[in-house]
Length: 460
Image 1 (cartoon, rainbow, N blue to C red):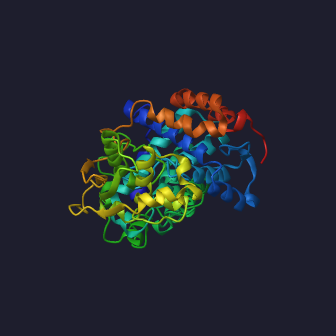
Image 2 (tube, helix red, strand yellow):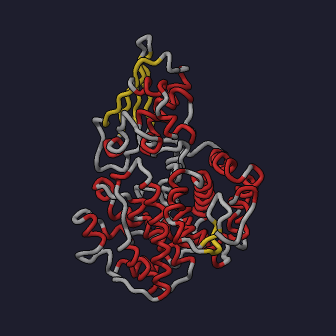
Image 3 (cartoon, rainbow, N blue to C red):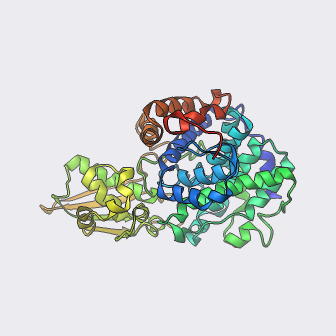
C-alpha cells in the first residue's frame, strides 16, 4: 500500500545521505520560516487564535515565537503555524501548489524543544516531510488546486505528520498509521483566501500532523490504504484526476528541494501576484515611472493565478494580499512592497485607489492549462504621453534556482522580519545560528532568541 511504501522511504532520509544542495536549501527554508513566523507573531490572526484557544493551553517546553510563553507542543505548533502564514510571506513549492515549510517547521520546532533534539535531527525530518507533501502534490495537482482545496493545508498535514514521525523516530508501521490518521485530518478551502482562515489553515494542519504522529506513537491505528481506498483521500478529493504512481516514481531522485526547489518570496503577498509585480518594477526602474506619468496599466497572468487574485476592490489588508490591482498600485507608488502595506488602513488610502482604477487584470490568452509554466506575467504601461512600455517575466525572482533572489536578500529579509519582534542583536544571533543549524546541539538553546529582549518564562 502506498502509505507503507512512503513511510519506509521517508524514514531513510538523513542529513548523511542527501546532497549538500538539499541541505543548503533546507537551512535557508527553515531560517526563512522562523523569520516570517516572528513577523507574524503579533498579527491580528495570531493573537486571536491564541485568545480563542486560551483555555486549551497547557504549560510545556515549546516556545510561542515572539513571546515569553512556553506551552505544550500542540498549542505551540498551532500558534506558530498560524503566525508563519499570517503575512503570506513564507516560501512556496511549485510541485505542491502551496507553502511547504510553514506546516512542517512549527511542528518540528515544538517537538525538538520538548525532547531536546538537535538541529541536525530537525533538518533530516524537515527534508523528509517536504518530500512527502510534494510527492502527494505530484499525484493530485493541478486538479486538487483548481477544484478549490488549499494544498498547503490538505497536503501540508501529511508533510507535518511525516516530518514529526521522522523526528520522533517512529517505526515504519507507526509512521504509516500517522499518515493514515493525517488523511482524515486534511482540510482547507480556497474560498477562505483573503481572510484569517487562510493562515489558520496552516496552524491547524501543522497541529493535526503533529497530533497524528503523537497518536500513532501511542498506538492509535488507521487504514494503511487511506490514500488509494475507494473512499480514501485520492478518490474523495480528486476522483479520476490522480496519478498515484507519481508518489513513488523516482523517489528523491532528485529530492524536490533540489528540483524544482523552494520558492522564496521577496514580496509579502500571494505568490500569484509576484510575476506581475516584478514586471512592473522592471518598467518602473527602466523608465522612471511614477503615479503622475502613468495613464494605464494592463496585466496578463495565467488564469490559474488570476482566479484568486483578480480583486479590483479589496476590503481589508488580508484581501489586498490577493489583489493584483492593489499590489501593482503599491509597486508603482513605492518601488517595493512591505508588511506595512497590508494593514486595513493602508488599503483605504485614496492615492492607491486612484491608481487601481487605471489597472486592468486579464487572463493571458495563450495560457496552457496543462502546463507547469504558469508563473509568468506580462505588463503593459501606457504613459501620459501615449508611450506604451512592455515587460514579460517568466518567473519572479526567488521562484526557482534559475531565478534566485539577489545575494543576501534572504538573510536581509530575515533581519527585517525578526528585528521588530526580538531586537537587532537577537535577530543577528538567531540568523547566524540558523545558517549553521546542523551544528546546533539542541534546538531548545535557541529559545531565548525567539522572545522579546531574550526573555523566556517557564509557564504560560
